[in-house]
Each structure stands twice: as C-alpha cells, then as structure tokens.
Image (cartoon, rainbow, N blue to C red):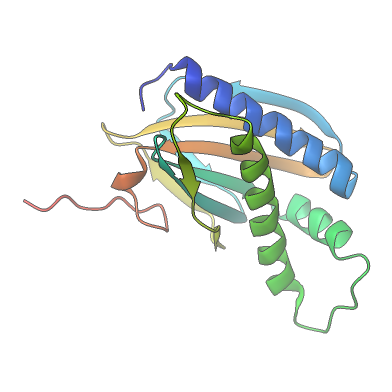
Length: 176
C-alpha cells in the first residue's frame, strides 16, 4: 500500500461517504464534518469499540471502524428501537451493531469500487472492545477518515498491508 495512492484515497473517500449516508439514512445521525488524513500517521488511537474487517484480493488491507462510546450507544439505540432487549444484552447489541454497520458500509463501498477489475474479498467483522494505541512501524501505512457526528466521533482507518497484522491489530512477528 503506497501512500499517497489515488486508488486508496478514492477508496477511503468512498467508504467515508457511504458511512455518512448510512448514519443519516439508517439511524438518523447527521455527520457534522468529515475529514481525511492521507499521509502516514505515526499512531492510531482506537476508541471504545472498533470493528475490524480484513479485505483481501488485490487490496490486502484492514479497515477499522472505531467508535466513541456515546456514538456507539446512539447507533445501537436507533438500530434496536423495535426490539425488546433483556437486561444484560446491551453490550452484545453494541458489538453486533458496530460490526453490522462496518460490514454493510464496506460491502456497499467495495461493490462499486473495482480496482483493475480484480476480485476483492472481505472477512466478517471482528469487534474489539478495548481502547488501544498502535504505533506505525516502517512497513505499515495508516490512512484516516474522521467523522464528527451530532452524537460523537468515529474514525475509519485503512491499515496495510493487512498481512503484517493479526485480527486484534497486533503486529505479526516475522520468522527468522
């Protein structure tokens, strides 16, 4: 993943726009501002809940959708408004909701985004529930979209190359 790369820039913008549309159309949360950072960032700071989606094929990246707690709760409240939740199910639905949102947004974005007409695949989301900091090593590239909404902030990170990370965004040690 070379930065700045017009293909990845366009991909990040597409994912950011699809996420903004999803929030507005599906859960009635308006995005106040969206900004992009396309040069390499030295450190990522993951928020309260983060849904990770590994994208394979030509891309080989990981998308991380990272939500502040207030925003994750507002999305979940709107998403589950017609359900009767039992006591103790709130955390389960928070995780399911952010995973579902990331899956839908990324799926809709990649559906219309063909890079050199090569296949693009992605894995189901994995949700991590702890805030975490990831410092970039020399091989990694981080691109960022920041969405400020009326209910809080979320970050969308495009992290690559995907093969140097495990499913918790820990670096995989190279065997010598």
